[in-house]
Length: 137
Length: 287
Picture (cartoon, rainbow over the protein chains, first blue to last red):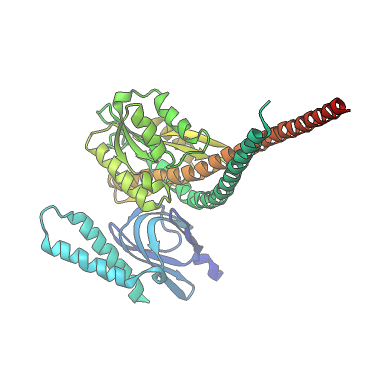
């Protein structure tokens, strides 16, 4: 069989733009149920995305991006990721990410009354995902 | 007949007004191009979102999910998207009319205003404005839509409002903009059935996590995307409407200037004739 056969279309769409649309052989990302990797011929499934790294494998090379929230619709030969926020490592401001990580950690550590814990945790996760995406490179 | 000087002054004033309307038309043409592009870019996302959500709803038979069932409260939240600036023809008043002339009872409404013009005119009419996010319409960002949608959803889950609507102007094309009232929540059962038939052929979809939890997470995103879509389209419509209004203002000014030029020339001719007659009469009298 031709080499092309294990490829499927990956679409990553944000409200502002079509972030990515190409043939890929594997895609990995983090969902609320844990990390997943998807090949062609996956059963149809809709998954909710948790902050993490999006890894796209094409032929030999891989690409990473920080993926923060949204959901993914998986079909046997197509994966559509509707992302609310997704960034290439080049678009990430590492300094800002570090800063917001420290801020979030501090808020969680202090645990002052009235702190929105969920929000602090989310912001920490986002910051960590950003930093990882940059450092992975 | 008005004197020459009066006509000249009037003409000058109309000319400078025309220059302003011309400039405004150009500005809104440029802005429209940008806004249109943004609206088109975001379309892919909404179509996908809409398809996913409707196919999800078609699959789940669970009508008892809080987001799918009408809340107990008779109050209704309405997000009203208008512009911050006027001079856009009927753009703002058409959206306001959706609220004032619809089937709504004034007392039942909680208005979430986006856009100063709509807020002011609804305020004058005595509607209760609970939230004013007029700044976001200048340059709508997805984050703005997220904030707004979390506010209305909070009111909805707390039971403060039973239904959520979005009033905005949908952008069909450069010249056609339709004021639209969209029901965001609860997601309507009617439209669900119709989609269910459509989607029957599509492969059965699995959800991870389970349906209910997935709905909990996806519906807010769905609402946010609809709000964002509404904002982006409204900006495009606003500039389209302003472009049209300014175009017709410019051509009206043109017409008036033509008319005034004619009057001015007539007056000038009249005064020359009169002067000549006076001179001739004077000369005759001497001789």
